[in-house]
Length: 248
Image 1 (spheres, rainbow, N blue to C red):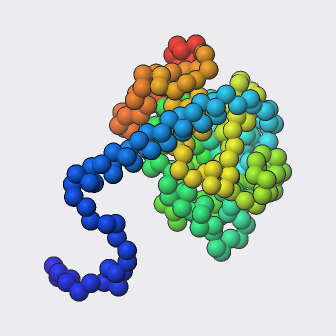
Image 2: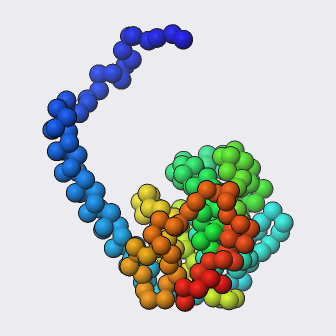
Image 3: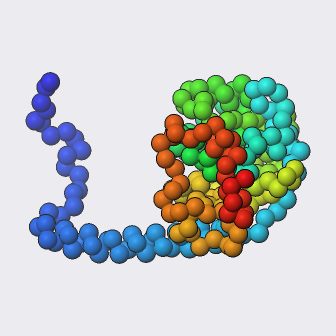
């Protein structure tokens, strides 16, 4: 192995000041107070998010998958909740959106944790399904369910962003039997940095959350475990808590 002793070009950029361990500990403690306040503020926002009213959307809206046309209700894959990312991939897109591609890279590698919380995560785009799947193959994310709204009015009907259906956004839906409701939507910087599960109407379903009465809840820090330890019933959402707190 060759050891490089010559400074690289970026070595002259600014660095934090050098201090003693005691000074660093004091500065870190001060920052910790701000971080804790930030965490509490995020909890308050998430609590407000879980109290948003919901609006019904047409459950029969059509999307195209690898095996043909399905409805929006089908995209739930039988689970109670759906997080749907509105990807900017266009038909014959030679320059896929860098922001959407980075978002795709940051989607959790294992969707099992969301599946076990009765949540399906999926993406839709205006590109034809074969092109969308080829793009996801390039992104090495064939684990994410993708759907095309090409040739349908679905994207225009469900896209929430004020910037129009050509932009990116994220929608959260919940179903009640055969009916589908939008519970949340965000776009722009709102898509950045918030755990996806926190965007759903039931949240992490843990007792630390200030949720409405009747919301499903488990002990704090019980969300998620080794992704290969979930049962098939858990991944299908069949063991998720009901709004009475009992397991279905």
